[in-house]
Length: 119
Ligand code: AMP
Image 1 (cartoon, rainbow, N blue to C red):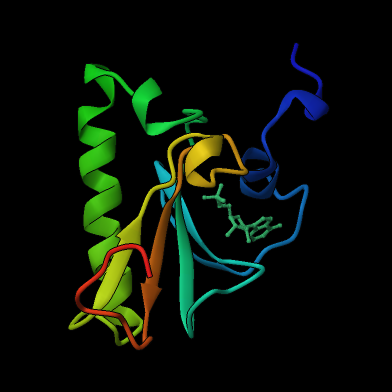
Image 2: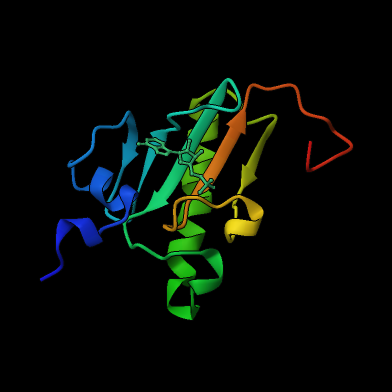
């Protein structure tokens, strides 16, 4: 059996071993507040299944990935930022991924640089 130290940070949050501000939970994912927000609204949509990176997902994850997007839209609406938010997935350390358990960043209620995805 896997030791709890083998679990990802987000699996430990999903299992209640590490506290987090949980805004939504269903059978397939949870949504938490990011601990170090980079926008007035900064939420993380996290699948329960610990897929390390987006590129590690496969065809069997098709429905799950669709679900994550639908939840992201619903939560953005609830957070009052459905008119202007960004969804970010960092894939790989070179792109800034620090937690190797797939997650979608919802960034909202922020002043975006409309001309740039990077800044
Ligand atoms: P990434 O850099 O794309 O892997 O994103 C990981 C995110 O997880 C960062 O924005 C962190 O601030 C966030 N994070 C790390 N630890 C926690 C935690 N215990 N609770 C909530 N968010 C966290």
